[in-house]
Image (cartoon, rainbow, N blue to C red; front, side):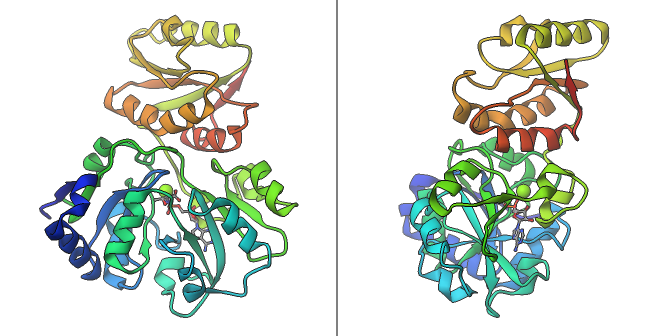
Amino acid sequence: MIYTRIYHASDLQLKNVREDIRNTILSGKNIVFPTETVYGVGASALNLSGIANIYKIKGRPSDNPLIMHIADVKDLDLYTKNHQTYVKKLIKAFWPGPLTLVLEKKDQVPKVITGGLESVGIRFPSSHIAQEIIRIASVPIVAPSANISGKPSATLFEHVYEDFNQKVDIIIDGGKTEVGLESTVLDVTKEVPIILRPGMITKAMIEKVVGEVIISTDILQQDIPKAPGMKYKHYAPKAILEIVSGKEKKVIDYINIQINSLENMKVGVIATNDIIGLFDTPYVFPIGKSTNEEEIAANLFAALRKMDSLNVDYIYSISFEDKKFSEAIMNRLLKAADNNITYL
Ligand code: TXA
Ligand code: MG
């Protein structure tokens, strides 16, 4: 068991805290910290025991590669090579920010990071806390989302405390993460970039900068995974989750009929603020205004984790299709539901 030190963002100014962070990372131990997307559990990209320990404490399969986080664009050339010409444009448009670029790796990048692949995912986060941690350590930091493998990603301090207290040396409490869904993962090793994981940097946004963009078919068909991470059980709440899609009134009626027929069960509902009061159960999570998709995205993982803490037996969620960010939101929600969706 490890004694976990918890620091706040403002503590990063303190000399002894900075030293503790630096020593912890450089000696191959682990730190949980916020980024603008979700919390990450990090280690020095150059320390094999720190990296191995991430896989162990997350319970993560070893062929699922990690993203390397940098705080200076210059580091990109230190670790990757043979860039397509459009890569510069993407960096100019979206870095720092929630876009991970998968590039050909140089030999310096240990294969334990890449799950044996010749490519590596690199991200320059916009979060000032994340940037500061990388600068304090003065090495790139590999960090998968800070959740036990299979659970929803963590967007609140409470989530990471639950999953990693006494398992890592340091947790940085940065409050609620702003974006709430993990970065868009974009394979830029080919002439046409391929979205391996949709995120809040959407296909349309990327197309505006580089022209043609492909969405990996693996995202659409669940069976043949390309981003190694996409093949595993993901974001799963403890209870069965069913997404209900259709006209609003029909969806509300359907869910209420189910709630009333599941008499002795605790049934949870995830829906937008404007309709959340219409369900016949006290176990509800208002996910945001129906007109505010950023808010819905930011609250999705918290909604799933809230349902876990309420110990419900069954969860209904309304569907979030036909929206600007539905690519990313529905990708996570469908995975959380194991594709259990009812169309009315
Ligand atoms: O927003 C984020 O990306 C967060 C924060 C902490 O930065 N990190 C994150 O990491 O979501 P993780 O490990 O939970 O998800 C990384 C995804 C996985 O699906 C992985 O398979 C994919 O990126 N990935 C990483 N390197 C790759 C590579 N070389 N080729 C293909 N996919 C890769
Ligand atoms: Mg993850």
